[in-house]
Picture 1 (tube, each protein chain N blue to C red):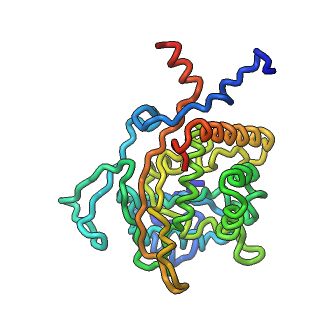
Picture 2 (tube, rainbow over the protein chains, first blue to last red):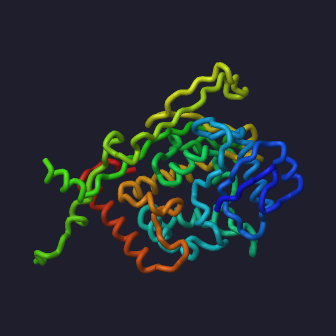
Picture 3 (cartoon, chains in turn green, brown):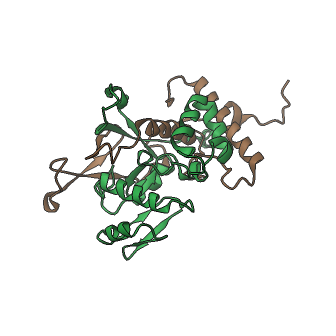
Length: 188
Length: 137
């Protein structure tokens, strides 16, 4: 869901402090879902993401970015396990990634921190500033951003934090559909 | 024995990974990146340069405060990349934007979505078997 912010005022309205903060910035659009509750938290996380990425697309460094989800918002639109919210995505991931990954996803993003809370799909670790064009391409898988190695290996103590890591950009070509192959063969 | 009327083309031939030049959906797409003079300083607009972003381009994600403003979780980026490789290989990334090729957003057609997901998986596994190491994550 796209929530426009016009004239410095977010909609739906959030924390007044946030509104003031927003009013000092250029208008932008955030592509995050509204959960009905906890909108203030959501806006706070969007603003933190913008601050973290310095109000620029993390990839192209263009201004006026949108805040994009890495794991789609629809996965966590309800505070419940993935198998309940997105049964087909669950089956897909279960086949390719396995139950351990799903359990970690559930605990990290889907399930609420406290009983009755909302999902944590809008946490900063799942948000990234991208230009509107790059957001669209990223969401459709035209390109991917892959960390070089496993940056978490560097964290040896609990107090260690990750303040930077390298990411590799790749375009993702599609597979040529078989029908196209055959049509190509006939035409030659 | 296979009935001659069965068209198993789609199952037996999963296609192959196209090169970036062959894939028309990538045609005309170009990303450039503003080059900062120094990572922690604002750029100087008049002498800013743009560098092309192509496959293999490496850049750094940074945060000024990893406690209050944590970076994207690297494993989530890896998971997104792995899932998108499958979706693009199966040609399912276009229509179901942001849903990783599943069709159950409204939970209205669960059975249809299930067939699609299974079909996609079969195609990908077939492809993996045909060309080891090619386009696999």
